[in-house]
Length: 296
Ligand code: PMP
Image (cartoon, rainbow, N blue to C red; front, side):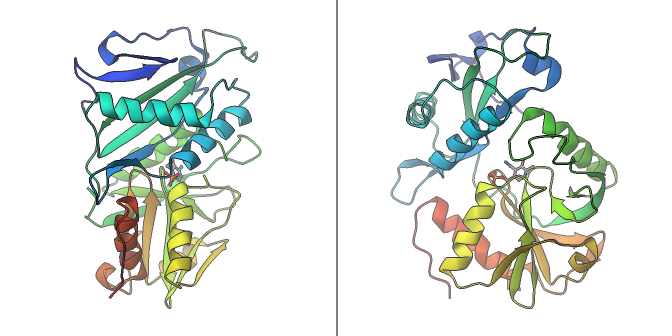
């Protein structure tokens, strides 16, 4: 198992900076018992000029706030104070290239009744950028994303991740690297923790809103497409059309941009190195460290 903290690590808990080793939580929390909490996955990078920069900080904390509101978890903070607290956590732990995990969670409550207060923690640990250069062998999961009428799917809620864990573990047990989940209608949705795009005839396609988490990296890819004049379309995608794709990739804060080697054991028409996704990956790598990108 990975190590996320040591005896010196500091985290933020309800307005205080305390040692992770000393931090306590309530084992009677509604969050632990029912998966009723919301969180974010954020990255900070050492930029080209040496500063530490949280990538898309406002977007992530806005989504955290909207996730909490969607689930009726009381929200007590401003976006600004949480961003300031996150920079403080990074500084106190001497981190630049880091993964940041804020969690808003519920107090002790065994009933389903709404709470009057929430707790917040912000944790961070070192994460090198662009670990995943290895291409992924992806399989269609036997698990589908939940019916959007069963959950507030636009929220990044802890409980949704039981679905992600099942799908990811199934894929690995079958010898693949990652799962691709369909939606309740059998159309392409997303990975367990990332959105996807595929390429066909020089155009990119990605599932439209409705059955997916609206990823901040997905929005960044759309931003890059507009900057580089790459045609891109958000639409309903079938697993059959994906089998005829020229290339495909996942995108997410942790995964960044990561190409697929094959889909359900079928190789793609293009080498990853020649794909539009590779170009997007280069542009993304530059963007997060605030370095100008000039495609050749
Ligand atoms: N879909 C799911 C299910 C996720 O967990 C994530 C990771 N937060 C994403 C998509 C990508 O979102 P983002 O780019 O905001 O990290």
